[in-house]
Length: 180
Image (cartoon, rainbow, N blue to C red; front, top):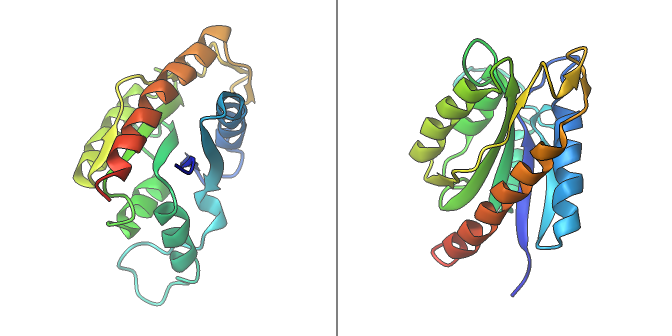
């Protein structure tokens, strides 16, 4: 059987964001496992107008659909803004439907309380999209896992948490592939 494709989705498009650092770290840990093809998918690379807005540049929607559709599962890198996920991530999720269905997902969040509130909001959205999110949830603190709030320097225990999350994402992705 071919290896699974797991997309690591960067959930922020803001200037000065730290999600690329977190995503690269997760990918580095994941690649060492050798159990799937891990790819960073940066929503900032796609031109996605606000859903339902007329006259916007929708030139990136087809590529977004293809990128998400090619995955068997996901790891969402989620930052907490105003007690929830970013508007850009919500918009990107809402743009698609079937491409998300019957896939697994893990969540790596960060914020002042580890991004816990954003992760919980994301879980509700994923449920509506028929994405099975796993229980283990690495929660990174802006106070202990980032230096000066910008330089990502995770504590060693966080790597164990990422691997435990992936230990759940991979079997769920394998099982869900059989019903797609």
